[in-house]
Amino acid sequence: MISHKKLIKMARKLQKFATTRTKRISFPRNNRDANVGSCTTSLVADKGHYVVYTAGQRRFMIPLVYLNNEIVRELFKLSKEFGLPSDGPITLPCDSVFMEYVILLIQRGVAINLEKALLATVSSLSSFYRAYANQELLVYRFNHTVAF
Image 1 (tube, rainbow, N blue to C red):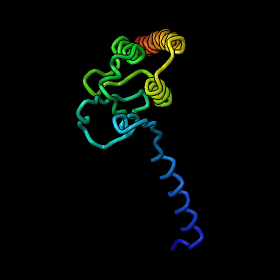
Image 2: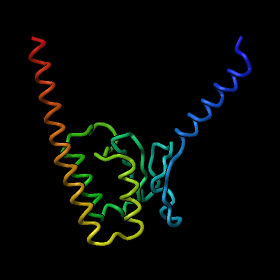
Image 3: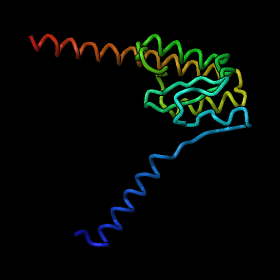
């Protein structure tokens, strides 16, 4: 039988774990953008929205209007370019923090110079992912040839 002290300790750990897992940050500016950055369980996007996932499998429901933004379009190009799984949901090659930042900038109306700087960052991500993909391929080839 478990002592009450151990039971309380386990309950606190479980509660702490549960609270860290369920925290989601969203930056709604008005009712139209209320679902931006939110993590929902619905498999279908709301009308006028689309769903994307980040590399860390965080789900974002984003208004279709955001497709007019150059940063979002560049992220879509990167997801195609790096061969992320195309049979499943749309997965962007960035983490959730970066995506939340992009959404916040779009909501606030990003300045031209900041958008250019962010596009340069996205382009450098492109180079990083290319180098990473090449290294992964070389490691795979090395392991593959050793196996024979």
